[in-house]
Image (cartoon, rainbow, N blue to C red; front, side):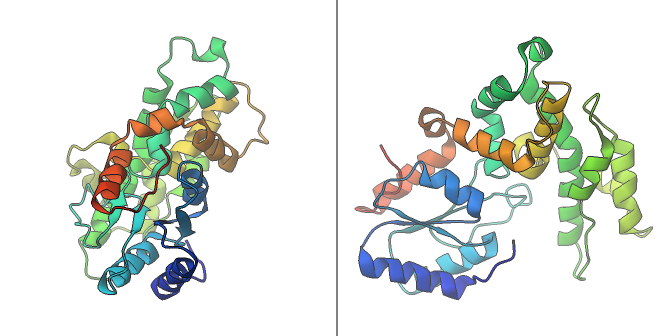
Length: 278
């Protein structure tokens, strides 16, 4: 995510807010995160978009060093959890799935979106969540293997992009993924010195919701709703589906997540600062 912000400008933005009110401040990665959390926070809590995870973490490190209290950041877990990376920055919580979109697909929000855009005749008897997860894992395993390859080298390597291949390897009529074609496309960009299939075979067992990637899940859901799961108009974009998932997440469903439990624990430890509504 590219933008004009950096950790220093974020710190200045937070401090400027504090000149108006000694309120809690919630720092999130991007615009979708900002839209989601604004719907679930108290009015007294200010929300700030960091324009990326590194900016959010860098901001929190600086605020801690300057003893600025009452600021919380929520960032995507990405592959940090699976790769054993420790969150050294204080007052930073991670999503309890790979990212926000994966949290939404795991929650009842998915059922509501499928009910809105899908058709009962096509989804009857089908576990849509499991079917979506199965397809998402094809891409997620490739992404995770690439992340591990990058971590295992001291050289600066340019990893292949998975997202552009998604449109090429998914059959819209049958909602099937050509795993071999995906791997071949990525392998072609990696070169002969790196064996992608071997890297995937060496992946350990893991929570599938930390393996899949939210952008893949949203794109796959949209493709499924066009034919196999429904008759949705092609004018509905990935962004439209992502927005529908955010709006479909009820407060009661959000309360059931480990992330909200962690935010509430943070609030208790950082009185009088409050982030979430009752």
